[in-house]
Amino acid sequence: MRILLIGLILLLLSGCARISWLTEQGMGQAKILWRAEKNEVILDNPKISPSIKRKILLVEEYKKFFYHYFGQRATGIYTKTTMLDNKAVSYLVVASPHTKIEAHEFVFPIFGSFPYIGFFDLDSAKDFAEDLRKDENLVTWIRPVYAYSTLGYLEDRILSSFFEYDDVELAELVFHELFHTIFFIKNEVDLNENLANLYGKELLKEYFQDRDELKHYIATQEKKSVIDLRVVELISILQGEFTKLGGFITAEKADEMTERFVTEVFKPDLRNMCVKLKLEESDCELKDNWNQASFAAFLTYEEEQDFLSDLKKAKNLNLKDFLAWLKVEFKSFEDQKKIESFTNYLKLKVSHAPLAAD
Image 1 (cartoon, rainbow, N blue to C red):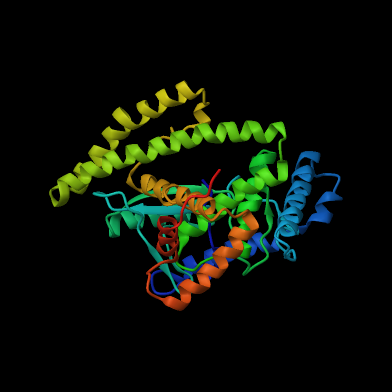
Image 2: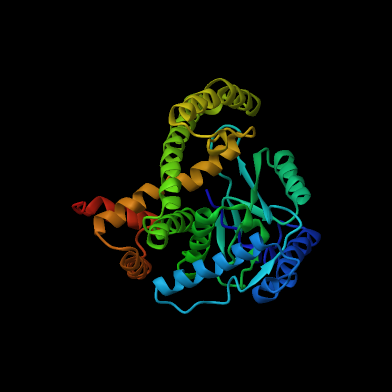
């Protein structure tokens, strides 16, 4: 699952944050920009390892393919590389109420609302999460981020965190992030992420064609999709228990229920599925820090992707034509102003459209 972080919005916040916090975030973004070197400089540096140079060349190749595929002029994105001090570039704080699984919304001027808030410093993320727990009585979860997009507001850099991915994963990452530069809907975080996920995955097929590395990757991803669906089913069980108890459940009781659910139901169930599917534990969802907030974060990026695939299939469009169709439909959505979100507008299109023949 990829997470979109907009570093620029951290410079525009007001009221809810201290000046020192704003300064820290601005410096974090600026540091990434200032420390960057042109790719050709790094490629000519004999001290840089061949493996890093190879990854940079791959990113450039993937970028060239992406913009050529959509017939668009390439931007300055990924023309420079920043070597980070840590594996992660930033950290997202996700929060949820104790008694239900629902991502707390953080509202930013101009950019809209997001189910997370980002920090370039891990200690700052931890401090903010602690404040949310104490001051707003929320459950929190911190997730490391290895890539993000400023949506064209700044020229994003290749980050050394990219080099943690294998070739196919790197291609999907680049295609995902580049998609945000050509299509982004304000206040539609879930839709934006899931469209980028869809295009990232589908473009792999266009780029790698029938190469063995793609076949292996797809086989693993299909197994992981089975796990993801099971995670959603299991989360709904816990959510159902919270709903049944309604206002009679305390925060402490909800936390106890969640911890017991994770230990006695969630992890054993997933571990058994992973064994049956012959998946490595690293490819399963067996991390130690599952709670209401991490469950909410998982749902944020997993629930909507199927309907987009169904919509593309129903319209019987290739990737280029589907994007063109989305742009036309968004203009229509803006003009009619009757439906509250573009996501709901598209879902109506799914329900009214006949499925195309295979």
